[in-house]
Amino acid sequence: MKKKFIYRVLSLAVIITVGASISCKKYLTENPVASVGTGTAFSNVANATESVLGVYAKLSGDQGYGIRLSMYYTVDQDEMIGPPNNASPDGDRRDIARYGATSSNAQLEAPWENLYAGIERANICIKYIPLMSAYTSGSAADQASLKRLYGEALTLRAQFYFELIRNWGDVPAPFIPSADQPTLYLTRTDRDVIYNHILADLLTAESLVPWRSAVTRDERITLGAVKGLRARIALFRGGYSLRNSTSTVTRDADYLTYYKICNSECADLMANRSQHTLTPTFQGLFQNLIDAHTLDLTSYEVLFEVAMGGGSGVADSKLGYYDGPRVNNLGNSSLTATPTYFYAFDPNDLRRDVTIAPYFTNLDGTKVLQKLIGLPSGKFRRDWITNPSISPTSASNYFGINWPILRFSDILLMFAETDNEINNGPSAAAISAFNEVRLRGFGGNATLANTAATPTTYAAFFNAIVNERSFEFGGEGIRKYDLIRWNLLNTMITNTRANLTLMLNKQAPYNNLPQSMYYLNNSQTLVYGNSLYAATPSATPANNTKVAWVSSLTAAYITNVAQLFTPNHGELLPIPLVSLQSNPALTQNPGY
Image: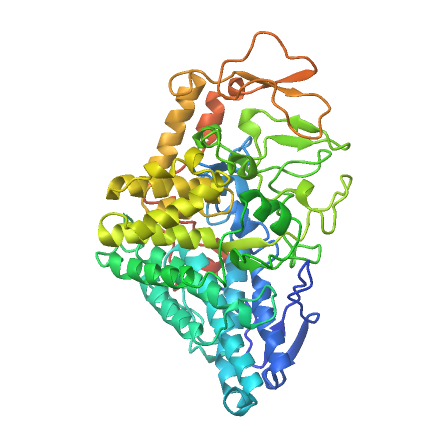
């Protein structure tokens, strides 16, 4: 009788499936779906390349970072929340956002399977590429190409495992093709064992994958991505997590060992600024490069991105559709900023109005201010897409916007954070790295950024890092996992609800905020008619429309934020029911 196994993918003992993933910019391309024997798939560099591109394919699409891994699993926290649960429970994405998911949730099984399918494809490439005769005896060019492919497969497998661990904790961990496994009923492997394995793999990959300047610019992994991912994984290896063995959130006593790995990798990247550095303007990074589908040929701030394209759920993303402001009332705008997050930004911080889009756009391009409780996340916007342009009447869900997994600003802030931990206080280099990120957020104005006041003591600098990472990475799927690795998720959710209650009751520090806002009618740009930081004027400004602002906040809204989160439980998702039923060796996460 045919069995379903833990990741329910086809055993590729004889064939390897090369998936189809066409980038919106046509940089990372592969042939249509085909099934070929491994002898053919790894017979030459071109075929091996197609096979590795098939591994990349599992990053994109609806079951990857096209929507579920990037936007369903990453909320609620103190920055962004998912759509309200008007009919709780829904057995779907709203339950995930509210920390009320069960093992039968409709949005768990397919992404879980997709990640394991990526691991299976990577395992096959990792096994067969080094066995190719050209790997050791081919031309210098062929050897270099195959070593790069091998390093890419190791790196992709590390990313798949990292995503599994941060969502599900200890998971089954096959490191050989399923056809070579003595049994497919695998038990869970301690996450630290997996972390150590993939950290070693990434160190190996560093000797195989070239710097981006040594190869043609495309969306494939280069050395900066390998080193940056190794830094991030080491940081999480040293961080807090919900342990399956104890059902409590803890971290290992030797966490500084891994912070030092992270710090070293970041320092190396910072010493190679010709490879990657910050884009001059924060808005330009998202509007002119990521959303406009334009290659960054100057700063290369995005070290690791998921290539999206093709206009379907197989290989594209819903960035700009599921999140972002609506255009002509098209789109979901399902990720919205908490009012307290909007007001956490300094008024002079230019990142606020990039991270949070306070408007919708009409058919004629005029802007409509939204209520304070309905401000969409803003980094991925269909009205910023210019290459190719998206018609305001287009009902498409897919716009080919790439998902940035890792940016250089994260390298700077990881360096600063780990330096502070290692030295029990920040060095001058850590403060400089922190200030570089902050300074860009304020348009290069050191006075407005107040970089002179950057803390120099351990606790104060850590708190500054916690805040700065929020301002820098809002809406990029990072915050929830940062809070977990700091063991601050419950604290921040509790604080957010408390601060929202203060705002609702017009108490300090929110007592002087406007209950309503005005904005200019028929304007192609959003122009406020009154201050965001003072009481609403009694008279309506000429040619303005009034919108509920703080007055839009309700007790029901506050209750909805991470409504069912429970410490030592909500930090992990439940193992999907289908996989539990298919594998008797698999156990459930704490509390499910």
